[in-house]
Length: 327
Ligand SMILES: Nc1ncnc2c1ncn2[C@@H]1O[C@H](COP(=O)(O)OP(=O)(O)OP(=O)(O)O)[C@@H](O)[C@H]1O
Ligand SMILES: [Mg+2]
Image 1 (cartoon, rainbow, N blue to C red):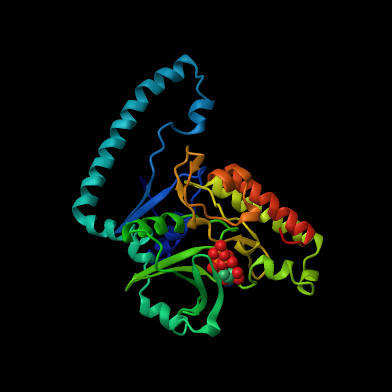
Image 2 (image 1 turned 45 degrees about the horizontal axis):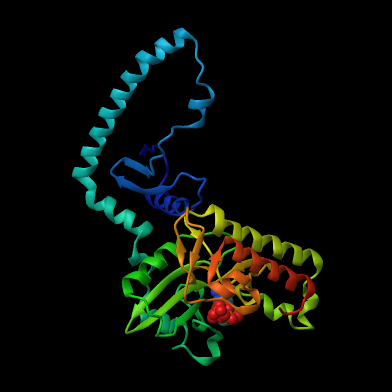
């Protein structure tokens, strides 16, 4: 917990904290939340057990400095502990509710849940003119929220045999995955047997539209293709290695690579697959998802999926991007 002083404006402070809390990476200390009360400003971080690097690097000290440390450290530690107990009691007494509310803002279901009416209005009642395409999980519609933000809404087909709570939990986890080369999941809607996933709208369609259209293909010079391949690799590396959860995509293919206004690639549909805890690299499934030409043989034949089967699909993807031919 860290006390912050001399920062301007409460609203500015809140906004900055909300932004910083969204930065999630295995190599970053996680900001869990904040507390704002009177002149008190606290930042709440995850506790990292093994101290900071300098503690290990500069361990060799002379005898005198050891004695000084042996006296000073316990005294400082006591003062710090008393200080925190004091702060803790004060904060707990005064603003427990406040803290809960603020943390909610950062990580709860409510902030990600949209109501059906809002989405229905945004997509003009799921009109055909707003339909962007149809995939294995349902149709995708373009929409615009009242604040002007453009969204893509995936209306899941109703037979996806998963409980409401399970669905919410998955969405919460997947929404936390944030990377420049991933399509951002903004939220979800769960109402009247409807299940919707709300994504950021990525303006330049998916890679297949460009790659397999003889006229549009000209837009993709070698430099652009090279950048696209690099971007996909970075997104995939984040899913496999750098995010807090290990995610195996399981359906990496050209139609799941979207291009933003600057033609940067963004991987979509990454959370549709099963979620992994960090040390688990391999799974077995009886219900195979994925598209045949992209599937590694062990996945296609036995349902074994792993980081390696994703890399196989990535290989097929690279061949397609280079050759311009479908698998
Ligand atoms: N966030 C988005 N922004 C813009 N367009 C999108 C977005 N998500 C999907 N689309 C468009 O909607 C189409 C359908 O997407 P969808 O993911 O449902 O199908 P798919 O990728 O062809 O197959 P699959 O269901 O296996 O992923 C895509 O080809 C893409 O052009
Ligand atoms: Mg898709």
